[in-house]
Length: 301
Length: 61
Image (cartoon, rainbow over all chains, first blue to last red; front, side, top):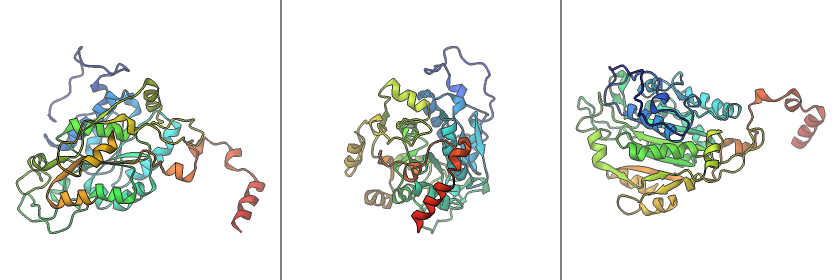
């Protein structure tokens, strides 16, 4: 609930990770998003992922631009909110800076407006060039801050809250990332954290451009009948081609992860070694549905 | 991608890990850069001297 202050005192039995931090240590200020916003679930999933991966909270900073997706950067202890579409150059430089501060993790969180409209050019080149970053799009299909106009990812034929039918073809960012050469592409749903958290962990461990398109319903402007990005619609039409577990194979791998080297290791002043075991960290728990899925699932084993 | 497109046309939302290429590498691998930030390099590393410049120019002729 966004209007309740967070208690300053931790419950004594609050679970701690291997570093002795609690979940609360990874949180920042209170979210100012609408109650029930999918973006808050994504932020919570990111926090949970880093908590479970035993990455120190002061080594995590979220980069963002402008929009609802960028407001939730506030819920992290460290965040950088920048001009719209300017977070990608920041992340570009931050990738370099990570070598200076090799324990840092800097997920870049964007919205569908930021990535599919004004920032589409930068999104394309980040994916094309394989910039080593975790790129999460919180995709709600509308411009929530300006009262719910269709965004570029809104599906053709879907209806706005006022009943207007979208006549434009959507931009499928996951498909675009695939065509541009991203080496890690996933799609999640903010209402399914059980699936989303392992995807975020795997993206953090991945060496290269890791993209996750997360369908995140806007409770104020795009959560009604006729919307194709509402909670009800996505739950009814969610075709989960796989569900993964993220496994840390050995303590040595975990040390490398905390040292900011992902799975590829190596001295910061030397050329990077080839990435190694990211795929082995993923264990497929089996596909849920339908044909055509098994190929993807087999790749995860 | 054909599968994704077919499911999208059917109104389904495909979620999960869609593609993974673990040996894909990143931009720095492709450019063969060092991982250290440039501002941490010394003058000798940043300015290798006239001989290195002459060799670079010669390679472009």
